[in-house]
Image (tube, rainbow, N blue to C red):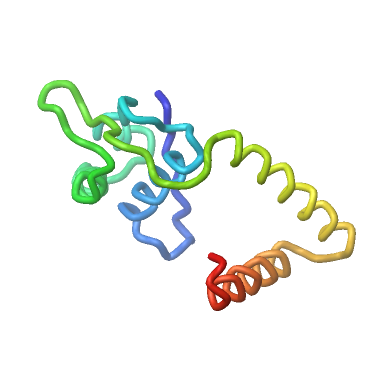
Length: 131
């Protein structure tokens, strides 16, 4: 199995959206690629103890976006990835971000500080047309 879903029941994000977001994230990171099979609804229901309709709703949303396609009797398969750098780009940028996080921790910032600072930089970049 290429993706193993996990839920954060305290996040305030609906369960089906958490599944959709995890597929999108896996596509961005390259851990899911076109042709990969998603877990069956039954497998997700058994591992997360959720309603089958929740899984089906998430898969329908992903199909609507053109990211996956259901093949009767075979399962649900990734149709396309998401635009964004290559896996090598992601690896290089992740290492740089890990260095940045380590330096921020050494400077005394906690997780909330990091999220706030990162969010502010993203917002500034968007205003400047960088992001």
